[in-house]
Length: 337
Image 1 (cartoon, rainbow, N blue to C red):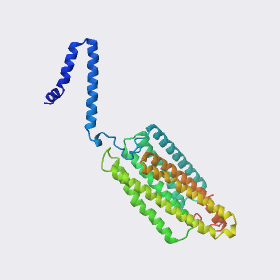
Image 2: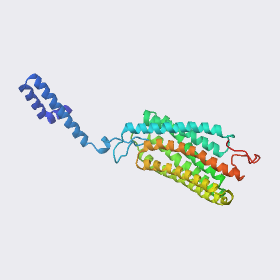
Image 3: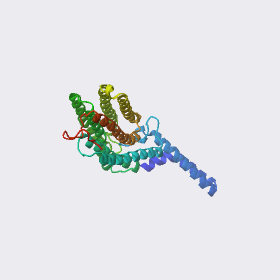
């Protein structure tokens, strides 16, 4: 039946080819027949492609991310891969360096600041390796790279927020506000981390499934809310810096304005590092955004040591409360040296 329909549809073409073969010499006959068949196949293939729905012949976005901007076309894959490798390599180097700094600087391996800092620094490593397997190596074992990404992403992001929260105790003593900030951090673990991890596994289970679009939408939500969370903590910290140091201007002269200006500039710089993450996320450059985010979090942790050193220096001079020192420890002893 199929052969009969094909013969009826292509009968004029076959008759023309038969006449051509009988009227030309063998060499020219072969060339012309080959040319006609190739042209015919090219036309048929283009007709078939144009007849298909757009959703069937368009390139589907990758499950975890969508390389390039769908509105402007796919970016240069080689350049994007080089950028991802560069960001991830720098993030891994910074994470290893942070481990060396932590264990060579802290005298006592305890306290919220120490453990949150250590978790945030080491979360960068599996998070970066997971995205390398997904976006550069091209691993097909989605269970492996999603697990690595999830294991690293939670401590990397929430650990950073806990680091910001823990150093608030040096200059901010409003227990109600501190409890609300800690409650916000804990609540976002369940509101943002847990749904995204579930959606990541679902979206990567196959090339096309119903999990992809919800994941893309909720990914933007969680990036925005985590940015706002760190912005709120940093804003409370900056406001507390002004209130804390205003009462000490008469005692320290020019030293306090310089200290306040330094802490303000460092915190503003840390906040500005997150702005490109939002821009890349909302312009759908997901793969570059995830690689750049790991680098940003490693840089922010390195900046934490500069902030902490200046705060501890000031609070030790004023015999203020030291969160790393037991009550029985003398006030002249450095907590992190």
